[in-house]
Image 1 (cartoon, rainbow over the protein chains, first blue to last red):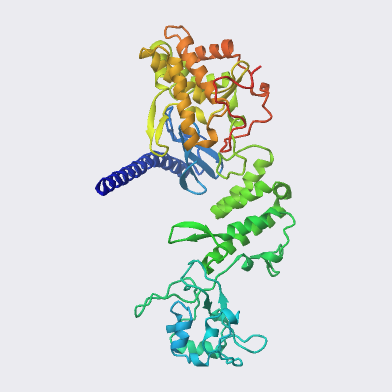
Image 2 (cartoon, rainbow over the protein chains, first blue to last red; image 1 turned 90 degrees about the vertical axis):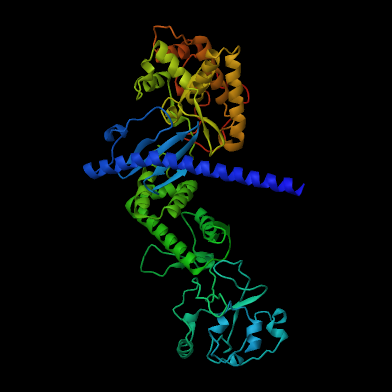
Length: 102
Length: 460
């Protein structure tokens, strides 16, 4: 009986660990795609001295999926985000310079 | 000496004052009857010049409550901390320095371990009462927090207290509520509070209407405070200023960066079926212009999903494009509000069911919609059973199964337009009976109404 409980605990722990790893991989994939866009924005700003108005300015072709999408907020601030599902976002803003779920 | 060591909880400080003659130090407890010292030898001296003398000329060891482990261990039960070393009389400071005691006081850093003791320097804890608020005249002395009257922003009194009492605890890598904190944390918070008030004073001078706007909108003031507390940089202050100005015109301009708004969807993304048709026609792949086979393939792809490990459920991969676009929410007289992200996704699902030979593709797609709302209830409670979700699912499925014609001469977007005009009686957002109640932008609040059926609400 004890052995069975131990076995179940080990299996559940491994499963949780596996899911956590997959979560991190998923997040890394999103960030990887987002960072490509961030680099393009940074290059554009370096060349032109201002933020691009939209993603076509820096020749980023958006597929009609989760993103990433670019939005200029004002002359000094922008956001890059993924639309996940119906109502969630993974977002980067140039103020905090961090990726976060919303 | 031994008595002093066994009676005190100096966190190892005793070895720093080893060279002093503790027998000569007077100890007066705050509550003599309960003091551990009282049970032992108690000697009252006149001020002996070792510690600060009180009004009566005696010296005091100040008794502090046990401090929950923030910044250092203080022993169990009642404990004693030394008064700040910076207050020591010069001759005593010199004596301590001669004895090798470090007097460049940093109460937070652990002193190096030695002789089996992992001791810390003496700890003094700070509370919100130690905060000061700068005055408009930067030359005048700041006012202690407790004596400050917040005339324009009464809500800040509570907000600052709550903010101050959130203490980061490295042991658990998280925040806890505590009325005491360390010098370092206190300094950081004091620095931010000073900057925040200077920001408000500057705002009053440079843009009085923006200042007045904040004074009249306590929730916005708190949101600005939260945002700046999290992003304490020059850019953030500049950004806050421009966003407050934009907010005064009632427009959400920042894509939720600041959360200064109430942050709810709808009006921002509300549009007409023509807006949505333009969106499809001008999309990167120009999907609106698709006909026949291409239109059929596109419709099928709208139901694609991918398992998401953050939410632990499959999520749509193709409809995210519509989430943050004008035209996501369309008002129709027969179908109420339609959420086009839901509409398109369940159109794709139902169309796939139909192509796979299902007998009830609409019913199956709607069942999927119910499952999704149920799972929303667990992982995204704020959007579960929003009143437009299930009707949108049903109408999407209906369009794909009963109205979309692969062989039609009309483009995909034209067929959609036809369905909205002929079946749902598409209208403009302001025609909706609840137009004045719907939120202004993306929301994490609960929907204004819940609907657990596919029957539309707010119809005409």
